[in-house]
Image (cartoon, rainbow, N blue to C red):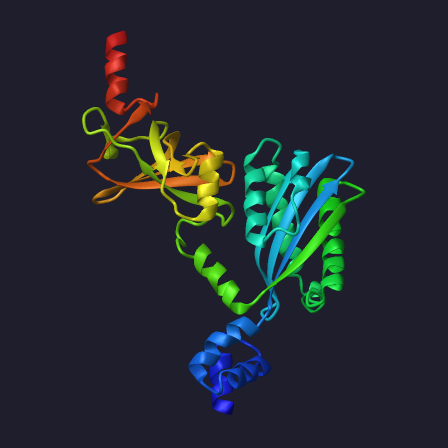
Length: 314
């Protein structure tokens, strides 16, 4: 019996009592118990918050996912904006829908990207401070956990934004291990492309639209070129961003124009990167010989073009 419990604990990182309960329910079948323990173990806590900073007329949303067993915040996302509609977001929404709404406000007018990123950085630092370890005990109780989070939130925002008053509301949601693994799989499905350089924001897969007759070869693209593309990233959040940016209408993909920021050439591929919005980048990887529709070429002249222009003026 102890060997079976030890095996389940090692495999799932669950509590020995949870492993024993799963074994009893599964009639001591280890394989069945391994699956059941994921429905028993509720050590993932999601805290959702909306807040108003009245003197500056700022509105914010915050979502934090905690692993109570490891005592770490595994995900922190927020938005601080001048848009009052931010505060109309419902806290009783499913955490994934809440996060999608949060991302939509990060794209809209009034969003303060720099302030938001600083806020996320300070929040992470505060929650990983050994002096705040008590929160992982309090989070197991809804009332005490949200009250503790309220004090932390106020303690971060007041010095950062030099405000005297922060009015906030909180909601707590518990996930079992299986639900957490499902979420973890979805965000890690494209590990290279799910985040941008510093771990902040979103990176979305695109496909450049081609025209064999009039297109420009992909290996001739340069930064500044404006090209046509469609959103091919299948993640829900990516499709939501596509809808916001006009790349999706009534469930149908629509072409959009993007401006290339960087071009990377490899042996048989070209990778282009664009900035879709603050905190959101897009990327496409195409065959070198694909003829891409270029709406407008960059004004940057090649070395040869500069020489020819000089000779014409001489």
